[in-house]
Structure formats: structure tokens, C-alpha cells
Length: 470
Ligand SMILES: CC(=O)N[C@H]1[C@@H](OP(=O)(O)OP(=O)(O)OC[C@H]2O[C@@H](n3ccc(=O)[nH]c3=O)[C@H](O)[C@@H]2O)O[C@H](CO)[C@@H](O)[C@@H]1O
Ligand SMILES: C=C(OP(=O)(O)O)C(=O)O
Image 1 (cartoon, helix red, strand yellow):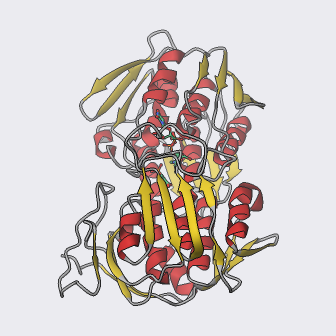
Image 2 (cartoon, rainbow, N blue to C red; image 1 turned 180 degrees about the vertical axis):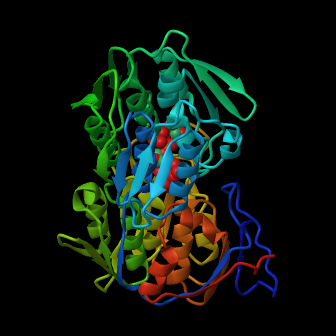
């Protein structure tokens, strides 16, 4: 039996699941969801603002000279983490409890950052504070980053672009320190790969740098376009040209902004996959077609049904067999990597062989160990299968998966490995026959708002036990 999972059948009274490879650092093994699966999920739920945009808009507020208002903010742990980070930097954050944040950056210059080390490992967002802090304070200390361990996730592009703006970077225990003795100046840079974070780094630094910045091979994800919209509201001058070129003319000052966050296309797709895998029918209020077109095409090719109206998208399993597909993840407008893990669970129920080539992260199939233990037939390969050769092909990374279905899933004891992998385990547990125990379930709160209340509204049967593993 592979490490990381024990089947429910083999598990004695006090199960001690072993983790499969690296876990996110904040997994709480004592937080266990016991799921009785095999029940189609039916009902409706609402998704709010995108996790991968809201945190960046909060950082943008640091650049303004007046308060900013951000609405449609989800109640997720990443927002709480970035709220504390902003507060440490002197930005007061008032949450109206209804999804609207008022971010006031008037005390940034006088903030004490004594506790900043405490943020080491909490998320990936601190790296985006580099430009804004150096502009405002002349220096920045950035603690070591966290986030999902789905590959090495280096920050070399970030540091290279910051140096090209004129920053000096010094490695320190627990993080890095940045200064810019001659200020930050516009630059011409080309990213080796269209990294989302490095593109945001350039945007957040270039808007207040002296002169013009030209970024080539930029990422153009919808969340980045929404960040550009926020920065434009603040007074920035940014043009998005063809062929992944973004030009930014630096300005002397930026104001606050008022903005409603775009909706979370990853959460919406995750529930869509849950509907498909459990033979269910879920209306996702807030799901938005333009940002999900690539996902919707794939969902339809697999045999899922959907219907779009003004308020959201209904996703359901129309009966009959699902179809296997060949797919590769890619940067936008391709099929996004964060959709891959939930989709793979649905593909375990499709007839025939599906091939998924993960080209964004080198190590995003670890979660399939648990699926295999639950009865899924999945093989992972080092080769680039089913698509163009990618950056990982000539190296030792298992980044292609072949999924053979339909497979009968059975309950197991599973450890949540990362955010999307964890949600995928949850879907598998809901689709499986019998009882599963999902350990470290609290990791899902990092990016899925009130998922337990949503499970209730969909008729899932489960118990959450905070003591079971202790
Ligand atoms: C908080 C957030 O928004 N997270 C998202 C963001 O992560 P994040 O911004 O971290 O992801 P990137 O787009 O930067 O990473 C893409 C690839 O570039 C590589 N890389 C990146 C930076 C760097 O300096 N060097 C380097 O080699 C990464 O290892 C990875 O293989 O975009 C990813 C790709 O859509 C999503 O999966 C994440 O959910
Ligand atoms: C990888 C993800 O997030 P992060 O970059 O915050 O780890 C994700 O949202 O799937």
C-alpha cells in the first residue's frame, strides 16, 4: 500500500494516516471530516471573489494615498492572513462582515514590523509587497513564502525583475531584505515563462517607478486583468498589447480605489467537478462564463451539462456515460492548473483512457496516490503525454497522468496534501461508496469559503471532528 493513505476497511479504531510526500505546513491532522459518500450533491451555493485576486488587490491598496474599498471578498483564511499582513504594515483593514473591506494605508510610514517573521510560510503574498514597500519606505523585509507545495515554486523571476528596476536584494535568515539606493526605475523585461506572480510583481512595482516599463511574455489571467483594472482606478497608466506585452508608465502618486472582485473561477469549477463526479446537479451562483470558457468546453467534452443565466451557472451530470479526454494545463487562456485536480476526480468516472499533461507545475499529481487507494486507476509518467513537450519533459518529474475509467471509488482515510488536492480528495470521498476520513480538512478553508455550509446545502452527509486524530 502506498504511503499517505489507509483504506477505511484496513483501519483499526485509532487510524494514524501517514502523509503522502510534503504537506502544506499548516495542515491540522486533528481536524477530520468523516464523509459518507455515494450521495449525489444537489442544490445551490454562491461563490464570491477570487482568492487569487482579492489578496493582490489588498496589496495594491498599500500603494494608494487614500483608503480603498474592495467588495465581494470571500471569508477564507487567505484573506485573514493577508489582512494581518497589511495591518503589520500599517494598513488598517475594516471588514463589514458582509464581504466589503475598507483598507486605509495612512499609517504605513509609521508602522512597526516587529512581528513580520511570524508571516514566514503563511502564504505567497508577501513577495508582492516588495515594490509597494520599497516605494513607500525605501526598504522591505519579505519573510519566506508559503502556499501549496505543488513544485519548487522558486522566486527567481521576481528577484530578477526587481533587480532590473534597481532594487538590491540581500538574503537574510527567514527572508530577504530589499533596498533601492537610487530609487526604482522603469525597465524592459521578458519573463522566461508567463508567471502570474512575477507579472503582478512587475505591475505593482512599475506603476510608481520612474519612467516606462515594458513587460514581455506576461501572464494575462483574468485575475491579472482585474488587478490592472484596480491599478487604473488608482491612477496608473497601463496598456495591454497583443502577444503578452504590457506597458506601464510610472506615475508620482496613486489614489485609493473602489472595486468589486471578479468571481472565483477555481471554486466554481471545483463545484462543477463535484456535481459531475457524484452524479449531482449544482447551481453555482456567481460563476461567470467569460473567465470559465476553457473550463466549460472541457466540461462539455467530458459529457457534463451546464446552463448559464445572469446569476450563475448550473452544472449537472446528465446521465449516461462520461467521455474520456486528452488535456493539458496551461497559462491563460489555456486550461488552468488549479482546475486540474478536481477534474481528475471527475475523469475517474469517464469511460476509457483520459490523459492529463500538467505543464504549469512539476509536482501536482501527488494527490492521485489517495485516489488510487480509493479504487481509481491512475498512472503518472515523467514523459510529456498527449500534448506538446513542456519544461518538465526532459527532467525527472511525474507530470503526466493516464486515468482509466469508470472506476468504482470506495471510502478511505486520506490526508489533505494541498488546497486543490484536498478539495479533490473531498470530492472523491463524496463520490465513493462507504465512509472516508479526510484528515487536515481545515486546509480547504484557505481557499473555499464556508465549504461545510455549502456541503450542507447540497445534501452531503458528514461529521467534522476536531479531536479524532489526537
Ligand atoms: C496566489 C495565487 O495567485 N496563486 C496562483 C498563482 O501562483 P503563482 O503566481 O505562484 O504561480 P506562477 O504563475 O508564478 O508559477 C507558474 C510557474 O512558474 C514558475 N516560476 C514562477 C516564479 C518564479 O520566480 N520562478 C518560476 O520558476 C513556477 O514554479 C511555476 O512552475 O498562479 C498559479 C498559476 O496559474 C496558480 O496555480 C496559483 O493558484
Ligand atoms: C496553488 C494555489 O494557491 P497558492 O498559490 O496560494 O498556493 C491554488 O489556489 O490552487
